[in-house]
Length: 343
Image 1 (spheres, rainbow, N blue to C red):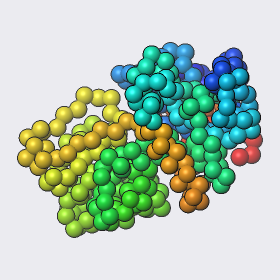
Image 2 (cartoon, rainbow, N blue to C red; image 1 turned 90 degrees about the vertical axis):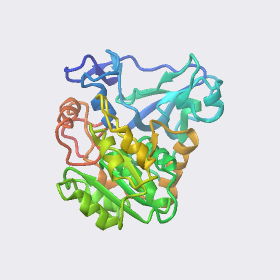
Image 3 (cartoon, rainbow, N blue to C red; image 1 turned 90 degrees about the horizontal axis):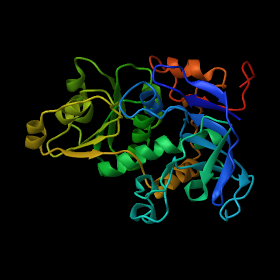
Image 4 (cartoon, rainbow, N blue to C red; image 1 turned 30 degrees about the vertical axis):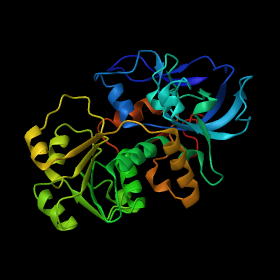
């Protein structure tokens, strides 16, 4: 099969022929239909702390069709359309039993992040079937939108709450999406450019304010005061400090942005304001399933968020371009698309 392989920081990703996966007893093979490029992929291949291992097939936002089953699989059948949590837990430790396999503490915890390929191996415990009306492309958004759900849940959003979302990539837009559904009264989205303003408003932001010298005043005017909750989704250095500054006294700062740099803030400022912090990384299986069910129940149209699907031939170039520019919210690999083929 073809797959995208990470070789070393600073080197372009390599499209290579790799062995087709063979399922073990409790595993299934998916024919990948779409796999989204995540900001974490850009960070983890860019030479930052915690880079991917050399030789690794990357990609963790995927959906596809079951094409082969291990002998012990009882919950899936060939032809099922599914997506999968990107970590397969051991199924026996406390977090796994509690439905939180992403925090698995067992020795058998493994990454299932190999979605930039024609086929990927998944464990039956990690898979979730797609609702009837959810496309495979939309299903590949389940992973980042589950992160947004976890963040919004940790934020303790109540009806009428005022929320500032900093950064409107996929995670920021997911935070907006869930804040609206949890009843937030006013939601301000902010970013350095206006590129994602229409996306933010489509998913529920009541205001979009471009980051500028007048931002603080414009924020207060839009919300009628400091926000109850700040959701930091940019991962930019210095934004935790700014989030503490923006939040109301006794407010919450929820950090979802993936920052690999050393950063700082003034603890006394947070102490005097009694700012409550939450750092969010993953989600539970229940949250992952709830996210996918919501996509199906509400018949949400995500098509305006997608760039045209990317082929293997185009993928390394598109991936590198995303380090500096992005005209769409989400770029996805179609492993079966040929260069120049109609999309």
